[in-house]
Length: 311
Ligand code: SAM
Image (cartoon, rainbow, N blue to C red; front, top):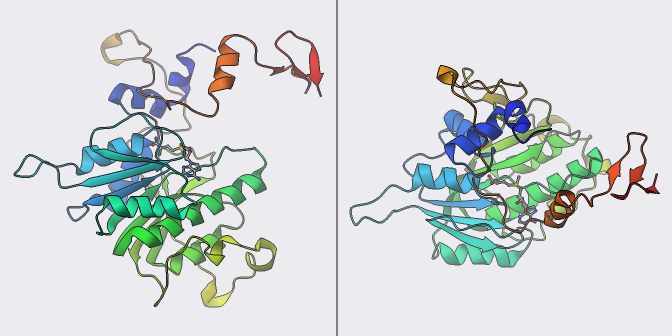
């Protein structure tokens, strides 16, 4: 597979490089904004949870950092990730874990006592391929993001987060509805149809009376067997589903030719800015030195030297 084959298979990956975005995920936030007008004039303080390598932070800076009379921008953007992220002008970065109260405190300190208008979270665990486990971990990450949000978001504010539409998703909708007036499940055009990924757009933050934000939220201790499929009557929340992004836009599941306007020759572009120290770095180094074990097509894992090491 040549370097340009991913460019052919994935139009948004290619466009991201052409337009200078650090990841194709930028288009997901842009498509969500088309539908929900997330970056209206009142939005000045934003938190980007699970932000690396930083394409959502790039969207936030391009949309929100409008210069004021004194030449400075009035928007403040705080980005958080477990991984280090290359600097971005106008973005305050915190390298931290969104499941920790210290991360919430650090965000608050940057807003000097003012609450955030918008919290976005594109958090994803390293996917194992075991669907139940992946969905469970994703749900935990979403609830951790919700916990952080309850510490920092203003009443009436908006929370946007990645969600996996697995079998227990209605429990998550119900939990989110405890805190927000309106919860919509949205699928941006740039998110592949074949993926169970979608985004919850939660509008009108309105926590239960006397709710005290905390990180040991009992919602995190979900007993799926007990509760998930037994929600009935008013407890069963069905979030409206919305496909967003302009229909004239590209289809993320289609393969596009590398033909350019005017018959110009296609030129491969390297990614704008990858993660600077990702957990898979060592595997990439082994791969480029042809030292990574592979599957032989019969389900056997073979070492780079071709000797079978496991089945
Ligand atoms: N929105 C990003 C962008 O546009 O560049 C892409 C985010 S990437 C899909 C998911 C990120 O979630 C990873 O960078 C990962 O390090 C981060 N993440 C996963 N668990 C986390 C946690 N507990 N705390 C902070 N970040 C976490």
